[in-house]
Picture 1 (cartoon, rainbow, N blue to C red):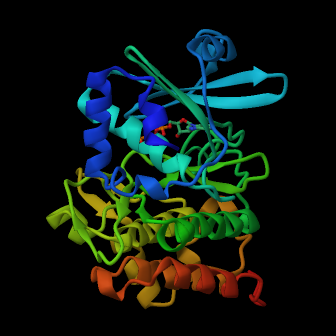
Picture 2 (cartoon, helix red, strand yellow):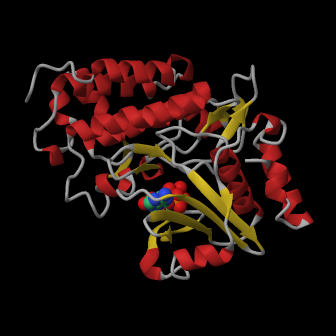
Length: 336
Ligand SMILES: Nc1ncnc2c1ncn2[C@@H]1O[C@H](COP(=O)(O)OP(=O)(O)OP(=O)(O)O)[C@@H](O)[C@H]1O
């Protein structure tokens, strides 16, 4: 994505706001490194036509930023359009960061940006459509009962999501911290391939910087302790959130559960006693009806426990996570 090209569609005031937003995320200073990938600036007319005027029947989801609509841009070309709910400095910043960051990365496990529209009070982001929705829908939402995520699928999703994050942390230039890894931000394509999405909170890491201190963004239950308490953000925070996501995918439990009496319990507290006693069978999602590979399960849980270490320096890098996940899949001999 080219910042100057993007801004020529905006008023001076809009451009200033976006410049400030991108400056805060270190995007402006590194803009010259941005790579060009195919994306386009859509017209409002095209997107209105594709989504049937943002008809409620086309709405496929809703998040903090706004609603997401299904659309067909031409015969057989399906898209998802995220429509900004209300214009504010905060949402303008999320919009700018999302298009800038997604516009400069391409990977099989990252959601593809097709383009955007910015004009007046309308901000629209156009993505590849993911026909199997989000992990959240399958684990806890409307598709949980259908149990489409069998064990091999879960293993391929965890490896895919890990590879997407590995690319952001180790291959993208400059490196990118996602800051909002969670089940609703892992989308699934028609083959259930994982695509990491939602880059509105992403941070670029200038070369040689080990961590940044920022205002806390992200989602409760997934936040690394050093980030939640002191706003200290580094790649290790994504590793922590990824560890929580691993436990969620394996167990089908939410990161934070309300127990009777309103007491909240997080997934690490819940899983720790089972891990210390080696009672791995109790951790696995009952929806799998015992169909899983015990050796693979042990490997994933061991990785998740090291990712969620309260000490950020003790957590593995995403390179290491991918290596350990891959080496543990397909080696299990013990079937339950
Ligand atoms: N490209 C897409 N293809 C298919 N469905 C999508 C796509 N993008 C988003 N969705 C759906 O829309 C939902 C809302 O997405 P959105 O990113 O706006 O919010 P969220 O991640 O659910 O919440 P938050 O705002 O807290 O991050 C997603 O959970 C997903 O089900």
